[in-house]
Each structure stands twice: as structure tokens, then as C-alpha cells.
Image (cartoon, rainbow, N blue to C red):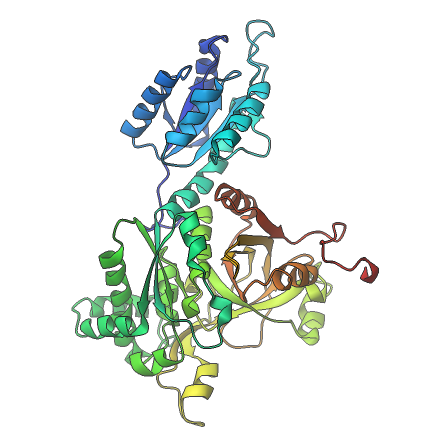
Length: 499
């Protein structure tokens, strides 16, 4: 599903052809025109920058043309060998993400119609390195017009995520809960990525919430919540409080966006929150994330960032879950073994109290109460009161990508990406929860998640988005991108004598 959200960038992609002056410029221009025609056939909107670039003066003119057209992401196309200096200055001077691709031969004779862009791409990459300029280069960046058009389509979600991150502010209400060092969030990594952060106290949020009491918009939000959940799937007496909180967050986002275009939240949600606000915030969090505004639990700043990246990369909503518990042998034997090609250690349960959007859950999902907090905060044997407000039920079966970008305690940015599935298997448990299966999860769990000291929260995209996420992370300058390696490829820390 495509997210219709003003909190997610719209990519306006342009293409600039570059040409080395000892090659015919018409070769680069005609090849650019062929790519634009292929994009049109594929339904990919693209702005064709008419100024071809041979010199630095041409580069300035082409960038001015792109800016005038509102272009915020660029494809630089080596229609022939290409001029190293002006072509790489494009990426240095352009404010948005840039991809470099090159023309394959075959659309002309091999005397006057040969462009040597295969060679030119090497010099282009070398020059980008000398300038310390980041750019996206596809896995095989040389192709005919149809191939290049496909590369451009693949670049759009990468560009959307990069634009989003560079214009993002993460607003927090904290501090993190006691003994939750897993939500440690060194600010250094955020600034390195170009992300702004605004840190507030839980008391600031409470004051703003109380100021929204009696807000005339509450009735409409209540009606929308009731419509979304359906009769019998929510607590009618809780709607006004939750609607008041939703408006509090939305208004805070608008008032505190500042110089940034996009916002994500990382909020403290226990132990003081429910007793003071009168409900658990999980369902409200789920509603915002379904509209493209991540609200990460437990002041998980890098969880919020990871969610936002996933939204931009997939143009869909996401969730944030605990990598929570192993699948019991009896559930595996009854429902998975023989039905799916996974071992027991390939499986685990992803859980959180109730922040997953209702559109990604099974039909019997409902607003319920947080069992663990009820045990902790309310009298034993009492009916749940202020611990109500979670969105619970099994998460619907789907392809998924489990991923996270994290800054460790030493200030180093690292990440992981693993594709798998949510299986159509009943969890027999509570919360927002699903049975996940990732090939070689057991080894990935030990030699990536544990070995590299990742926190227990992982972001979940509801499709196989590993290719796009990997490219986004590389563009952002992340060197350590781990994945679930096949059995034939041991991890550096794996004991060879145990295999």
C-alpha cells in the first residue's frame, strides 16, 4: 500500500547526460532521450534536463535547470566516456541524492557510435572518491535504455529515504525507562547522518496533553478511531483520552518541526505514563505510524529512525518489535514443521505491547490492556483501568524485512537487514505479536544480534525490501551492514568445529 503522507518525501527525479568533449555529444543526448522514452513507457515520471554536460559551465547550467524544475534527485548518465571533473561536481554541488549510470554499447556502429562509458564509469568512481562525495552506483551500472530506466525506478525509493533522513527531526519525550540501556542513543551518529533531534521530558508532554483537554477536534478523532476498530474492538470510555493524546502529538510535531520537513517521535511509555495520562499510548502510536509518522516505544531514538527509513524505502507503514521469544517446540511441530521449509531455530516471535498498525494485523485485533503493566501497576485481581490502550492480536502473514540502524556505545553506526516471513501461525499469546521465520536466524541471532550488541528492538517492513534498504544504508555511509548469511558462509566469530 502506498503511504499518503506529507511526512514522507515526494521524489522528483531528473536525468542529466554527460559527454566527454572528444566524443560526439549527440551520442549522449540520443541515448538520454531513449532512456526518457523508456521511463515514460514504464510510467516513471522523470525530468529530462536538456543541457548536456561537457564542461564546468555546462554543469552549472544543468544544475540551474534542474533546480528550476524542482528536481530533488538526479541520475547522471554517462552517455559516453564522460568528463570526470564536471560530472562529479554535479554530485558535490547538488543538494539531493545522485545516482551514476553508464551507457552500454549496441545502439550504433563501433567506430563513430562507440561511447566507452564502461571505461568512463571507472574514472567517475575514482574522482568521486577523491572528492569524498557519496553517490549511488547500482550493482551493475552499465546498460541499454530499458536497463537504465529500471535502475532509475529502483533509485526512487533509495532517494526518498535519503531525502527523508537529511530533512528529519526526531522528537523525544524521555528519558528512557530505568534499566533500558538497550535504548541508548548516542547523538553523535544522528548528527553524522544529518538528522536533528529535540529532547524533551515526559513532563513537557503531560503539560501539553492537559492543555488539549476539551479540544473541539476530539469528537472527530474519536469517531475515526471507532470506525477503524469496529464495534466491540475498543473501549468507548477510553476514546476521548486517546484522541486528546493523538492531537497533542500531531500539534507538537507541527509546532516543533522547525527548519526540518519531516518528524518522527521516540516516546517514554512506562512506567509513569499510564497512571498519569490514564491509558497506554500504544494504539495512538499505531495510528500515527500508519500515517507515516513513526512513534517508537521506550524512547528508542534509533528505532524511530529505522522505522522512518523503512517507510521511505517501501512507501508503506512499518512497525517496531521486540525480538522477543523463541517459538515453543509444540507450536513448531503442530503448525510449522512439514508446512514451511524452516527449522525451529529459524523461527522466533516478534512482539510489542500494541504499536503495530491495525492494517497489518489479523481481523480479530482489538484495543486491550497491557498485561505486564497491569501486573506491575494496578492492584492484583483488579479490572484493568489505566493500563488499557494497547492494540493486540496476531500480526497478519506477510513477507517482511527485519532491519535496524544503530549507533553503538562507541559512537559507530552499524546496521543489519534480513528478509523473511511472518507465518500464518497462531501465536497463542498476548500483545501485538507474530511468528517470524528468517533463514539461518539462529546463526544470525548469535553472530550478528548478540555478537555486535544490538538492542532487542527491530524495525519491520512488510515486504522484501533488503535490496533497497542495503542501498540506502550504503548511501548514508554505513560500512557495517550485516545480513543473515547462508550456511555455506560462516561468520567471522563462528566456531568452525561446531558446524
